[in-house]
Length: 286
Image (cartoon, rainbow, N blue to C red; front, side, top):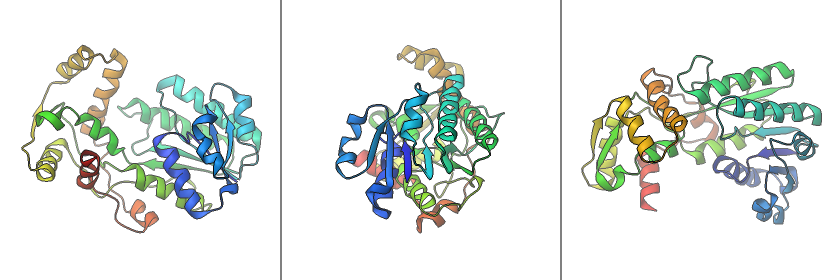
């Protein structure tokens, strides 16, 4: 039995679909805060149980019988994130889970300039301390984040962002396929994986060139000071902590934290991962 948390989210849902391509539905289970959102999976024979990271007992029940647990990282930051992960890991130990796989991130480190990477590093420490077999999937930075940064530029042609550095933007679909491959070949990795990245690391100067080529329209890249970017984000309604979080992505990129490109993802999925241009064309074409 393989149990997946976050199975109604972008990565979790895609991973469940790829698992169902590989193994029978009765070997797949999901833990969902709202099981109604996973009713279609239940209709296909997937075991659906209610599980909340704020309710340890519900997680113990949701994880029951799991040979492997895919713990999809929470969309939280700081102590709130780490506390939720601690609750899930403790529940996994109590439920007798055989192996925990965790969706970490490339650049996970206690001294990262990006808070989520510090959260990932702390979570990996907790996994290490359990004594259980575990794998940390060091996922490349999600390309969906770059596309969000480009949303206003999509209409104006002006990419106005802070100074950055190269980032190995990586697609959810490829990561889900790799995750399913690892889950169905138990023990392939012990501890952190190599970075699971797209085929190249790009800065936003190069992204502007790609957008120009993909659309046939001119895109220009303008660097704005960090303070100005933060002020603009707050003026557009972002809470100050979110503005700081967004800004820290650029600080970490400038520090080279997301620049690694590694062949492991391609080896896992048996082909070259989708490049940023194809991901942009797919998103904007829709």
